[in-house]
Image 1: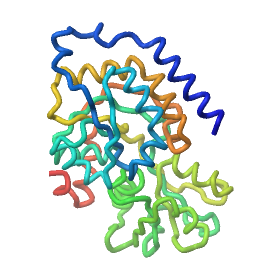
Image 2 (image 1 turned 30 degrees about the horizontal axis):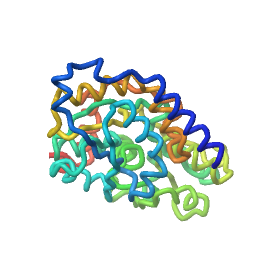
Image 3 (image 1 turned 135 degrees about the vertical axis):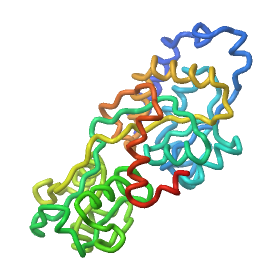
Image 4 (image 1 turned 90 degrees about the horizontal axis):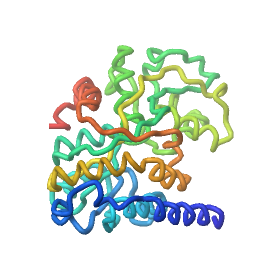
Length: 296
């Protein structure tokens, strides 16, 4: 813990010494209309304590980069983030692809910057001893998924079931078990596990298990990136300003994010400008699984 804190404060000191004045990138007249404070949340992190634990270093560096005070505003779920944006309780949200689609539909959230994760695929794994080798063999079986509405832990695995000819509502039983899915699979309480590739690999490492014992039988395409989205109540020029600065200083931001053990899924990631149409793939999946009304 002491070593981590030393690295963190070293990073913050370095950031403070090297980051240029953001007012150099915009006119002082425009900057005078910008907010003096921003409220930030992460859709899959519950509670102030958890936000602080996983994103305090990131918050501090972002605050330094933008030269604007940033405060945490915890939300109970990605669904709760939508009204928080609508009623100006939160200004910037870090959301998964599925969550962003919902926030965009319900609160007109504006994409700022995307975090491209190299291992962001949905996978389905089984016990090797089960001799299940394809998704079609999961008919009548139980599948552990992570959380309802999660991109890699629910939405896209459901699309994989549909593509294999299975009805997710009648041909299989889906259980949302959070991070306890690998334990349930090991015990035989479920027959398959659906997670992101990085989540699956971490779950095996944490449990001291191997990919040989729990092989992947299906993998989806690279999913759209996680995205920082802004309230549409913010000025368009200001949102663009935030995006430009985040891209310019993405190495410092990602380094700060990775100081928290809970963010290891972002290892090897890069930031790019977020484009709304990149998430049409997720919108199509919602329609395919019969949940199109959820994003309208």
